[in-house]
Amino acid sequence: MILDKFKLDDRVALVTGASAGLGAAIAVALAEAGANVAVHGNSRTPDATCE
Image (cartoon, rainbow, N blue to C red):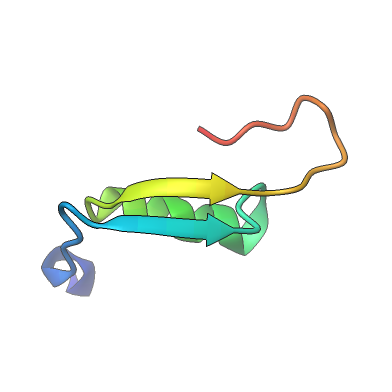
């Protein structure tokens, strides 16, 4: 798979809009590629979390 060659070890990524949808998926993909990910999102539900 092409993402096997996409390594972000020792990199930092900031993802805005990461509380759901595309932003959350991008944050997960960056973390799986080895990046340290900081996320920011705005959700109207008080129990929304991003793991």
